[in-house]
Image (cartoon, rainbow, N blue to C red; front, side, top):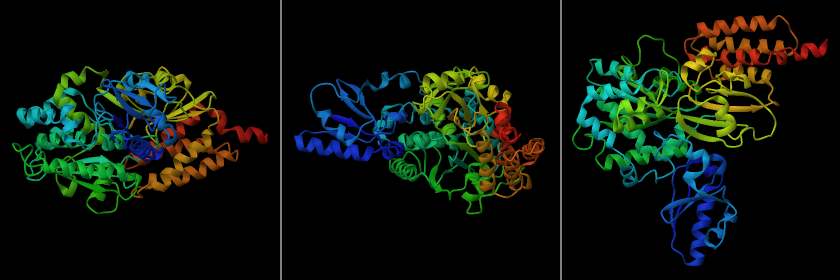
Length: 507
């Protein structure tokens, strides 16, 4: 009997370790041999812990499981938590899994499992093509930064490749701090070799011999998994003094952040990586020319780098066939908040917002009417029911005054207090600002004060708030202060009555 029980942090938080122990205990009591494989999560978080049992070569799911549900796995008849073949579950079957093709299917630290699932094919092809043609393939794919800015990956790589310096670096931004975002963690815990392969290809393409994975300290499971995977890849001769024994040197190291949201911004991350205070750097110079330790550096998000092995295996043109407009490929969407089916859903760019929330997410968990969804983290804009036809891609969201960002979607029902949520955006910025520039450092504090005036019924405060948002958006040194107005303005635009309700009540 072969059984899969996820070791992903979300599954563990839901009791996966206890379920795995119960399976081992039940098998021992019955004298049955059971192979328990700790895989990554499939991303259907509302079903965790999701146990899979192989029957006639097909993996059948059971969940959400508790230790009390385990004995019935060994008994004849239907199990009350039976879900049928896992890959036939509609949430999973509707996906286009490229980046997350192996996640949930394999033992994350098994080199054999990884290789059996197309692992290292992209790196081998890159070694055959050489640096210049590898950059061309990534450029052809249309891959853009999945961390928020959406900058074309191929252009960034070409810039670093053309920089003249004996030492270059690849830095992976795994400081995933946005509310409702967990794709980076899920991939690092469920398919760490994919990230290693993507970084190795990037190193080969631009002439970098060293890579750093900067992981937030709040991700202990991801840190342990990535360190173990790097050690395994080094021992197997895949990275280290040479790539797979035939290419140039490329080695990796994990660096752990100290809990600052601002270190998700690339220049703050680089300062922290160097042992300095995590503060934004002025640009120019760009990190591509003067990045880590003053050397040319590629800084890419986990999902950007993890998309590269598929691109190199199947070709940039094949990847570019997915998507919409200038948003090419797939986007791993993270659905969270007040929905029935929260989890990760990878699909080509272009799905409508309404389809994502009502069909994929299963609608509102509370049963109350939908009110708004915040997209792109705590500094992303809110979108209401009128935006249900909005397609998930960079350009469509930008045209509506929003951003896709890291593709975290946090859903709210009618009970949400939009004035309180707008104030929270300012408070979040005030707490997390690095303090480097005045518009962000002082503006967020003034924003809280102004919203308190609005809540008290001050008519003039709304106009002042709009002026403050303009200063923050145009004057801030980075996106921290520049994006804070997004949730505030969108909340006012969508729900103006909530920003005057106290005043009206007083009248």
